[in-house]
Image (tube, rainbow, N blue to C red; front, side, top):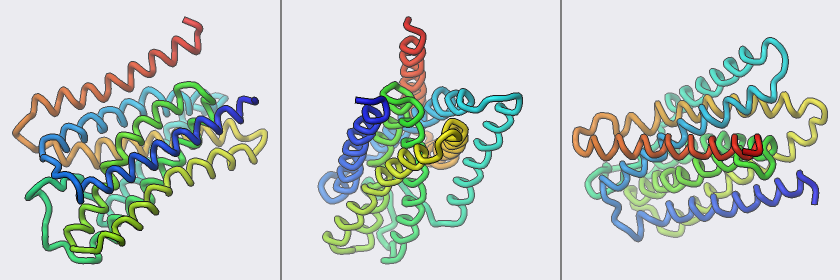
Length: 268
């Protein structure tokens, strides 16, 4: 089995897990009453993990694949483009609310609200798929893609929860919620596979393309963490200690994966 084949099978396993996580998150509003504190603790961990993955995994590996004296500037530019893309996305589209615990959402949500949220989430998932496909292509069966996968895997239930939660609040039929949930769950893996094979078709320029894609994804992940997840929990006066510790735990997990990856690369 070649290295590309092994990476493809790993990506397939990641895709199956991401689809399952997304379907699970979309199913939660109709089956379980999520508490306000638990949702915010999960968001804090994921925010820290995504931030750590952007800084410890995506940016360094993007830089490693760009050569020459302008490599650092190229990484900065593509990271900035990723951030700008996500900022514009957050501003243009009516984006998501993760907290659908009892009393946390507006029960007067109209039937079209979920369309804007689903549109934003779909573009969001495309970027995550780009990050996953590029990182697996870059790292093969190593932990480069593993860090990105874990960040997406833990974040995806929150995304699906946002879509189906607002659909339930708008009193849409259960079948419609299930269909949208399945369609949304497939977006990220599809984008990941297209990126994985698309990069392979480039040939000699694939290293530079992967480097730019990783840097772009780092910018998007930074924005997701700092401009999307954290503001939803930042101003809550209750449970500050728990939320802060959960955020630091997410960063610590990303850094621990970075250390394991570094040891494996250097044979330590």
